[in-house]
Amino acid sequence: MLFCMVVFIVFVPGVTTGCKGRLISKGEEIKLGQDAGDDFERKYGRETDPRLTTLVSTIGADIERAAEPPDYPYDYRMLADDTTNAVAFPGGRIYIFRGMIGALNSNRDKIAWVLAHETTHVARQHAVRRIERQLGYEAIIALILGRKDSARIASAVAGLVLLDYGRDNEYEADRMGMLHAHNAGYDPTVAVAVLQTFQEIQAREPNDFEIMFATHPGNQDRINHAKGYIGQMGWRGAYYAP
Ligand SMILES: [Zn+2]
Image 1: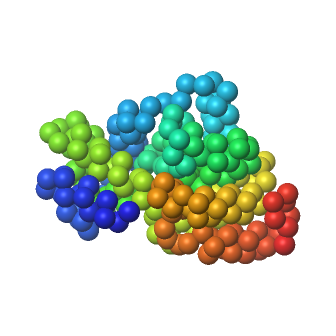
Image 2: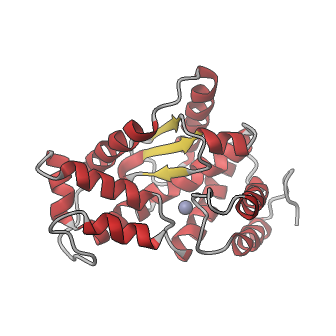
């Protein structure tokens, strides 16, 4: 995964890692996510089955009401691709892949936690901060303004959203995802079951598994972390009761 990141960056002229330029505004962040998201969904295609798209949009609307802070224009979309994955773009565009819905057996609690996990990457600005760090202000503005090389910059953004966010951000997304799912009326203990499912898929199909949870921290650490948070919050649910 890290190798991919380097390749993407090498293809963007003038882009360096660790650039310290100014931070983009919220309006720019939203536009960045929409432009890069449009590029991303052209690659995979939008799901057209209304049963599935309605399932995602109604659960997404529940999560949006519970998200903190709620002031992004969250937009939950489904891709017609059998990869087991879900990703967040800066500013509120969130995609869940058809393969993920299948792996979760269309279970509403499970989908709610996955969407809430991704929502946290937006709400806590994990997504935009990483893109700023990796691509720098100038490249982001070039993308927003549609300047030369904007297509390649959009690809670079799409490559970044496929990577995990590192230990602290992923743990935070797991915890806040549980909290927001709980506040939206879903069973937060489902996180344990979802992480166990990912662990099983990863053991069975390690090469196919491009998931929000693929690398760091490991799934067993996340299961333990999730159980600890459920205990701390005093939740008892259908999937785990400490
Ligand atoms: Zn994540």
